Amino acid sequence: MTVKAGWSTPMLRVAEVERSIRFYRLLGFDLIDVEGDDGCPLGWARMATADGSAVMFLREEEWHVGEPELQGIMLVLYTAELPSLREQLLAAGEKPTPIERPPWMPSGHIMLRDPDGHTIGINHWGDTEHEAWLKQLEEKRREGIIP
Image (cartoon, rainbow, N blue to C red; front, side, top):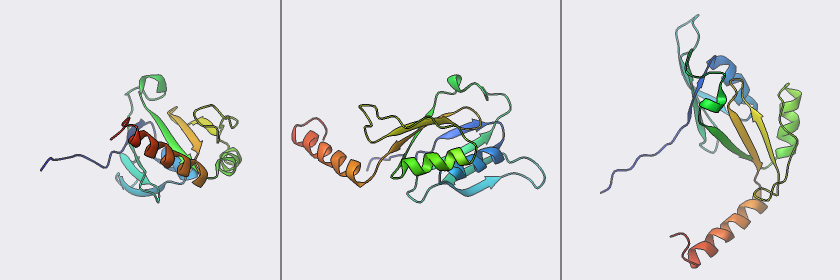
């Protein structure tokens, strides 16, 4: 039997875990676990969505916080309700880009930054997009492009 790893969870280094929790709740993440003493800033937190997507935050006072270009990560999220999510973010005081429709995501795409400057791309992905993707995968398997 081959041993495998799984449950890949990005861990973002942040200046203030509590601030990240507030921001990621706007995107639909729920708090799963935290570590920190009463009255002290949280040391880390784990959040997840109903579909099992997860992200962790580690309080870091020195490691390139505020220098997102040196952090080496971009989160990509998907939603079936991109216009509504964008309006929700604007109402909460966030600054997502206008909805763009690039060739690689013609259904719609926005970008924004979390409180520590991490880049987040959010793509519109509904039933229509998912069904088209499944057909593309099937064709790639028939052609031997993917196993």
